[in-house]
Image (cartoon, rainbow, N blue to C red; front, side, top):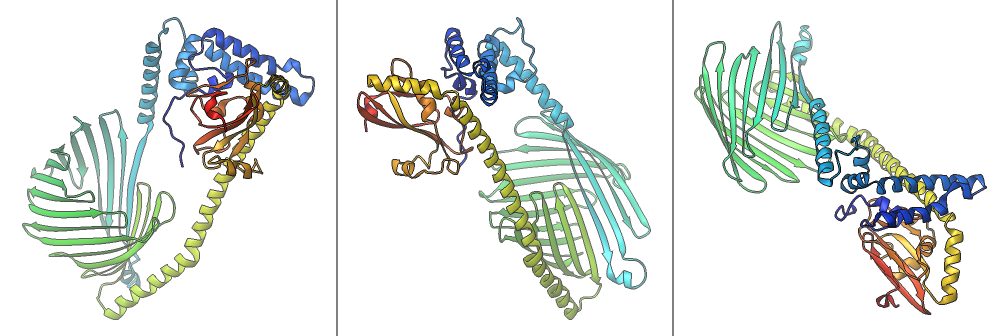
Length: 540
């Protein structure tokens, strides 16, 4: 479970110096002096101890330099270390938190605009028509090819531009076109597009879209051909029918007028759509159904019927990576028998239809479906699926090793920090024992699940393998001379000197057993909660 992001942020430096986020300048200086006495490298002769002291002293000094500077502290409180490292020029002109926040917002907006300007979203498709009969007749296997490409860029918050082009080759004939589209978001419910193209489809057009209500949208477009000056007017109405379904009506008036009524339903396991289209010189109907067998594989069946088409399509696909999908489809229709192979990766598509036969021979059609389907399932079962399962296991193992490595390093650093607290913590503990004061007997910090009850805590034997770190020593060090211990509210306890985060991403708690005035106490607190001990309510 992911750790909650609510609650105060940018408090790690306060935890490191063990002070409240509301601490005064004097309290910051006093805390720094106390920690500096413990971790100053000059106190230690042994090389290993000097290295440990130097590492932790640098952390303490950095925290003090930031929190003791009023302007830097204000920046840190607002934006954390990101603000400190943002390149913001500090000076007398920025003395108020509002001014600092405004300047940081300006820098952030500038950085976002630079990212947007550099962020281009390319998309494209390649369609290669292959013909087996044509190849057997000695005319070559390539029947034709179509290529299209487009680059979209969000040039500002409300404006975007798309530039594209396409090239088509069929036999000995071919041609191309180039297009540009400018999109402007007029408001939260309406937008307008201006488009132009030249080449095979030379035209100018404008299209506007408006959300009429929460569940309905209307689009109106006007386009004029630059070749014959003909005008086409289009209107589309879309209505949300349910949480998973919507319907639409499309009306086109021009040289080829038509009206189309469509419907689409999208669910987690399945999706379906259908459309009926009537034109001045044609009619047609189409439908498709897709079933998702898992998050990675799906099956598909589609049919088209009309004045120019009569075909049935069967097939399926599989997701082979986070952004890549392969599909194999089988089509039987009046144009012949086809295999179609598709590769989708991000915004790119490679589509290869292969014409197997121009004639609808039942025996050939059955064989053309059964044989490649069998080969597909064999390859999927014994080659593709094992390969990607092994790759996913390897990635998961690498991520786990990386996380475990980071936790091991954090544990080692916490243990080193505790070594230099040992002598002082032991002296404090001895004094408290002599006077019957506060002594921390056991303190464990880590996973909420592992600290669910006392029995689980007692069962924890291997600290390195668990999601818990023993913090008894640093808490004894933090006990004041008056016999009290306070951990401040809103400060993640993993930032306290001698602590670490033993279970990244998991909710954490602190469990403390302590004695005071001859009595036993125990308490469990959440990571960001305040802890003040001793308290009578903690009596066990």
